[in-house]
Structure formats: C-alpha cells, structure tokens
Image (tube, rainbow, N blue to C red):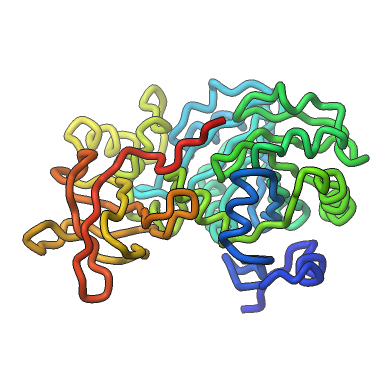
Amino acid sequence: MELKKIALNDVHEALGAKMVPFAGYNMPVRYSSDLDEHHTVRKAVGIFDVSHMGEFLISGPNALDLIQRVTTNDASKLTPGKIQYSCLPNAEGGIVDDLLVYCLAPEEYMLVVNASNIEKDWNWISQFNTNGVEMKNISDEMSLFAVQGPKAAEALQSLTPVALTKMVYYTFDKGTFAGQPDVIISATGYTGAGGFEIYVPNESAKEVFQKIMEAGAAFGIKPIGLGARDTLRLEMGYCLYGNDITDSTSPLEAGLGWITKFNKDFTNAQALKAQKEQGVSRKLIGFEMMEQGIPRSHYEIVNAEGATIGEVTSGTMSPSLGKGVGLGYLQNEYTAPGTEIFIKVRNKQLKAQVVKLPFYKPTV
C-alpha cells in the first residue's frame, strides 16, 4: 500500500528530516537527534507536524446522543470551547481508539482520532449513527501542528490576538492565527511540556508553519520528530494506542477509569461496570529500571522466582531522568508502587520497580 503524504512532506525533507512510514503516512521521525529534540521541547519550544491525525465533524440535533453512545466519557459536560479526552469502547471489553472530543458549538463537535485508526473509527461510529447525525471526515483536508514547550505561548503570541497565556488546559479558541481566519488554537498536547495544537486547512499549512518558525526563532524553536514525541509522552505515562491500549485492553485495566462514566449508557457499559465492581486482574503500571538496561515493548516481566507476571507495552531510556522507564500490564498483586519486578532484557533479568506516574514531574 502506498504511503500517504502530509501536506508539508517536502518541507520536512528540505529541513533534513529522516522520514519513516508511520500509521500509513510518510512522517518525520527526527531532524537532528531524538535527545536534542526531546530537551528542546522540555526546556524551550518545538514544533511537531502531526497532520496524520484524523478529524471528524459530528453535527446536528442528535450529535451529542451519538457521541454519548460511542464514548466512555460524559460529553454532556462539554460547552463550546471545551475539550475532553475519551475512548471508544468495543463490544468485547477493549478499546477501539482513544480520542479528543471538541465542542465547537451547540450540536457541533470535532473528534480527533489516531492516524492508524481513521477508517476503523469512522466505520465503528457510523454503525451507531441511526438518527441522521451529519458526519464528515475532514482528515485529508486538515494539517495539525503541535507547538510544545515552556516557551510556546511567548513564541506564538505575536501571531494571534488570542491571549495564549490565559488559555486553560483542555480548552480551545477560534481566531486569527498567522494571518488565517477561524483557526482552532487548542491548549492541548502529548508532551507534558505545555503548549498548543493548531488546526489549519492544508492550503495554508506551509505559510502557517513558516510563520511559526519565524516567530519562534528568537525562542529557539526547532522542528521535532516522532522519536522525541514518543519519549516525551512516555515520561508522562501517556498511553499510545496500539501499545498501551488496544482492542483487548479495557479502559479500567489501562487506568482510564477517570474517563469511564457509568451515569449514561454506552457500548459495553454493563460489562465494564461489572468489571469495575469485581475489580480487574491486571493493571497498566509505570516502572523504572534499577539496573542498567532499556525496556522495550513485548519484553517479559517476571517476579523474583522468574515466573511471568506481565509484559512491557512501551519502554525507553528517559532523556530527562537518565534511566530506563516503561509501561506494562502486571498481575494485580504486583501493581503497588515500590514493588520489585524484573524485566527480561535479552537473557538477563534486570531489576526494576513499580512507580507512580508520571515519571517526569514538570516544574512549571
């Protein structure tokens, strides 16, 4: 299957990005080094092109009912300008995808979904659309830039009249940005470093990207690839679909009970409610390596006797902490913070311990 190209594919190649296939798209994985790009975002400001993400517009009198039916969180709490993290549960107790729900106006919403799941999510939601809700897939028309880091607001402020420093986490505003009207400026991100996500039509993407780079030059802005995006999100303990959450992991096992609201009916709600009452047999936990070694996805987790008690779902060498960290599912009795566990790295059993997330505690 031919790789899709984001609108600024040629711009990234000209900037010297190493391009790799990711979720069906040709994407920039790094420009300089993962380490340098990671620290740029933690200490200053970086720009990610995440235009591979999917966007669906859901509108009409029954739009909220449809969203309530297919997502676990309570979207009735949303008002225009607010955003909610949620997930789409499947009928077997797992997760179709995790997503953001934007309330654009009364009876008008935007769902932001993972690139690898665009078609899957569209088909899944469509089967529940029995009341004539208008659905529009605008994924191929939109570009999305995540400008992240403690200097993000300062770097972008000259491009918009929207008061960026006053924006609250998980809210958005619509306004002029880099000369373009009606741009969604969202106080969200996947790094834990603060910042904004900017949604623009493909035709104005190049101009907006260049203006962000120019405005951010005085603040040390650099383009950042998917490699650093992964280490940044992992330091915060944020789940990655396909690794830490899948079609066979329940939101309760994944620590997403906080977005699973039983005050409404949604797909598989009864089974998940029963699971909550009975308790889960395994949980997604964070762990830090106590010995030298880098944990990787699918590595076995064992106890002191060598018996398998779980599996690593994401792992890396944390650039901020200088040690190996990871996420993984463990049998319930091993999930308390401080519990000693062992990660099988090649043929060695390396000592690690369960820790409370996030691994990295931002000082801002």
